[in-house]
Length: 124
Image (cartoon, rainbow, N blue to C red; front, side, top):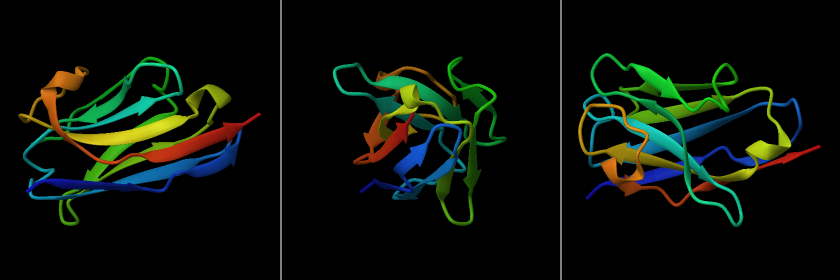
């Protein structure tokens, strides 16, 4: 059984930083792609960042590129999202997900297990 547990969300002022964690069990992060998505109230869930299985190539949404960094610790089977220079528009419920293969994807349908989400709120 695959389980993903996110943590690290909270309330931060604009310009601040947060680091989200996603602890995985039942599937190794070193072999599968892992993604972060977010969903703001009244909006669709959107892709934020992904890291591939194997060599760990990364890919980011344009809105977060240069501010967010995705990484993984295979020994801890955990994926991280370091978020810097946060903006009020980054406010959302952030989800991590594990992919169906090692390849990165921006598409929700290519991820088959999801965490419960962690709330990030950025005040102006």
